[in-house]
Image 1 (cartoon, rainbow, N blue to C red):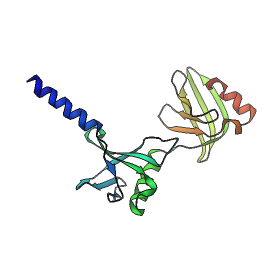
Image 2 (cartoon, helix red, strand yellow):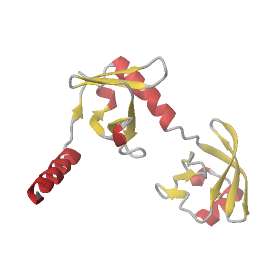
Image 3 (tube, helix red, strand yellow):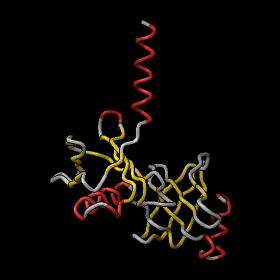
Image 4 (tube, helix red, strand yellow):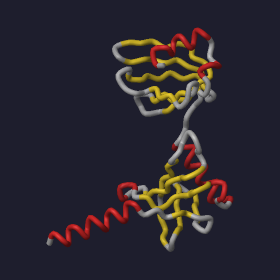
Length: 178
């Protein structure tokens, strides 16, 4: 009985650590409902998710393709999105645009600190926006000396590509986060 249990755990560990590469032979399509489907390895997946393994440093390399259900089990990895054929690449890019929507903050109009939250009023490359972050969390992440990612209370991401490009007044408002 104990040996059977050990075999089950060994099998699960092997399954969890196995890496399958998705190639240009595998076909991705956007469904009528706007989801991403995949035909790979003789199987059809009605709906899959795409996760960037290096979202900031190498966004189009090493993309994890996961089942939408089944606890998000990994199906395989695309080494380089640019190596995928036209229709597949276009469908994957569309999905990534939806999943990784990250407006770039180009101007900070105001930041107000109140009751443990910071309320941002900013101008982004997508337009004017207001959002809040929890001051007690790690909502602001430094990607480099000048690049920041800010995650609001609803888990939306905002990027400041170059803090040095902001005005002195804008930098002073950000000081409490740096």
